[in-house]
Length: 319
Image 1 (cartoon, rainbow, N blue to C red):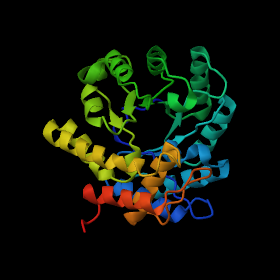
Image 2: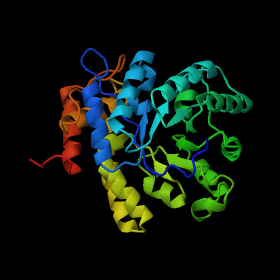
Image 3: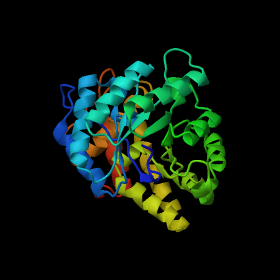
Image 4: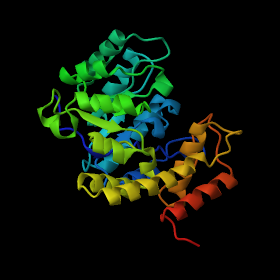
């Protein structure tokens, strides 16, 4: 059934802590959920990009999602990523997520084969029908090579197929146009899809997105500093724009930790996920900074840069 109100606020994509053998560290994951909920977040997105969903086996996905649902214990809604290449595979993930207690689903467009917008629409409608949970579209063209057209998103919002959109397209103009089409910041309640949520995945422009009418943010960096993103969200919603800008700028500086790994030796994904995990380890939240294969682990020099960023952001004592 459609949700009676939009999902709003800070909904971090929960990192998946791994042990040195590459298995899900359920104890660390439960502590991470506590860290996020205690930081005031409004929801959790398990099995997203920052969760390394594409690197996990189906068994590991189930372990991670079950751990997040149990640790959240109903305090905040849990969205489950059901990301895969084709509709039948996504439907299987959706059914598994529903059985494990997820409150909503997040899916990208199909990928690997080139996909027409009509096929993307059919994909989302099929997943919604068989998943039997609110469905959020994940616009991630850098990974799935299809940009979700605004007209298609609006159509699927209006007919109740989609409960929301996580926009990680990097196309701020397209996001702004969609928000205007959906009624703008002050007109959403009277617009065509009053229960539809628009969540930005760009943690560096949250203040601007919220002012334009976005309902919230799904920040990978929110694993490290959930309370900072909650303060930013609350400041914008409360009209305290000076505080919002200062908080956003502090988080922009903190985000520099994703470039700790040397570009000549590893991909940006390895550097970013490794930085998030080592930051959480340095904060005492998780036990290990291990990332899933074939990602390259951060070396000691990179970890030291992560620590420097944490201290500069006020998350560790200055020494």
